Image 1 (cartoon, helix red, strand yellow):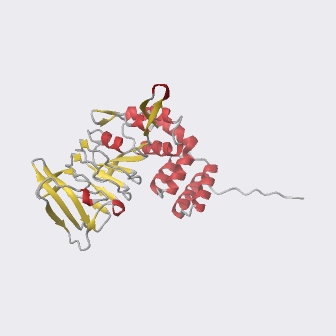
Image 2 (image 1 turned 90 degrees about the vertical axis):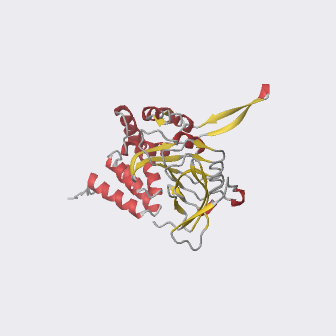
Length: 322
């Protein structure tokens, strides 16, 4: 995809700091270097809804990619996905402030520090791609604390998915100890426990999988079904015990996960779920009806084909009166 961009940046001892991006396409892929220097920081409000708040730290330089003709500030609802440069180590405060259209963010492995209010009002941001091997140290845990909503995380290498994880939401709120008139910060939601499963910036998959059973007590079973499905589909460091637990859960609640896949037009995920052979004929009938009512013809065709291959055509019953 050709990138027609106008990139404004400043140069520092540690490299280039992106100040602002202007372009024509809501899906942005930023280069790893600007002015011959690695891009190490994304400046405050660089993609924020209000460009007037941008305050560059030094003389601003400009680099043009492609041939932009109608370049506008890429911010707010005008931004759908962003691929950050691989060398980026710091995301300064509010760099994605009020990006209400942002759905997907791709980052390298080098992120080590985050400012405040990074993703305020980024409620549609539900997919985080990490361009690193799953056993490498990354800034994922820091990003997960900044993104408290339901989130899908994919580790990828050269465009190939190596592991896919789901993180349930968590939220914080002040709770009053009435007799003492003291306010404490309460943390709710299983997503907080899932975000603890790291050691020295490396994801601990065993701890992540052990968080599944406690999450069943209060978690969204459709979301947890997608979590289980992702672990089975890309089983990075998946132990037999955890695999058995995920399969057992999907045998009971796989229909909920399938409905979410149908609604999200995730045909490959639905095909993989069917291939696990955990859905019975009744579930397939109900899912086919759901796909038809939701006007999802591709999912409906997939379900009908799988049902025919697995259970064959319905047998006709004949009766004879003499």
